[in-house]
Length: 180
Image 1: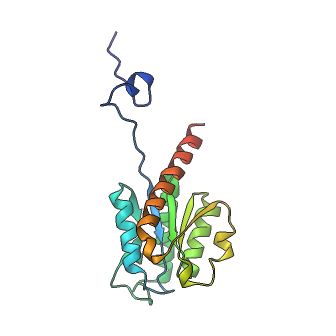
Image 2: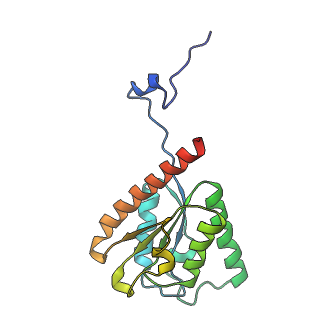
Image 3: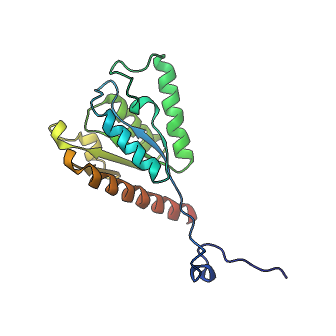
């Protein structure tokens, strides 16, 4: 009879400090405005860097690229559409999350949110600063399944901490649902 080693989550393991529960890091699709305006690129970069520093894999495409203007990428629109939808599908298949900064109105960001929610059923977390529009669109704020984190420019650090907690909570919910 072989020796059985403690498994993470098993009672015999929980008593040992060297035995830790596995942490699931999410695959995240990050969405932000490109043709709607590029003023938030430094913010987008900071969000993505924070998520990556927390151990998540982030698919952001060129939304964080400093050299891309509001004119967008110098490739065919069909190629952009197919690539971005493929990334959302990849995130969905991995049990991931879509995070969108929605302060800068963007039809493309809205399309990606709807695709994530209604085509793939993945969790969506939206980040919104009220100083940039009269109100967050009802298509985001009215969807009870979308978690919206409202913040001010001076509160970016707090928003990032809330975002990490929200991702951890969404991940825990998905893991529980997958086990049931």
